[in-house]
Amino acid sequence: MKIYTKTGDKGTTALFGGTRVPKHHIRIESYGTVDELNSHLGLVRDQNIDAHYKSVLIAIQDKLFTVGAILATDPEKAILKSGKERLNIPKVSEDDIHILEQEIDAMNAELPPMTNFILPGGHQTVSFCHIARCVCRRAERLASALYDLEPFQIETLTYLNRLSDYLFVLARKLSHDLQADEVKWIPKKID
Image (tube, rainbow, N blue to C red):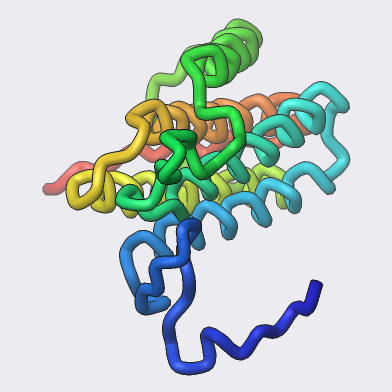
């Protein structure tokens, strides 16, 4: 497989199904941001963290390829002439969302209750996780804007929303595990 095709040299790219769109199209921004998120998750996974979190992150990275494929498919060409779906991959399921919720609940059970917003930081690993969370929120905003224009499987949006929640709680859990300080945001009083 050749890496460069030269077909995108004039600022367009092909979706699954062959439709060509500008590289700045909201669909490209959506799945490109999911790809960026996936790279940030790889960075979090490369840190010295518990093997369980690494395993969960690998599963999430795998699922993000599914999310990207869903977002990269032209809805008008998602179904082949035979009536079969163009993408022969699993969809995002309620079970995928439930797994994130179970992980969130398990981590939260070991954490002190949150009484204030928390400033990102405290340890490099925690900061990487917060960056991934922010990129996930951006991916969700872009996917939501795309959904308004060209709907796709709604569980895809739900998954991105729950994933950002997971990453927030993971950042808190990593702070706890690494014994890093969580700096609370306490608004200063106006005199």
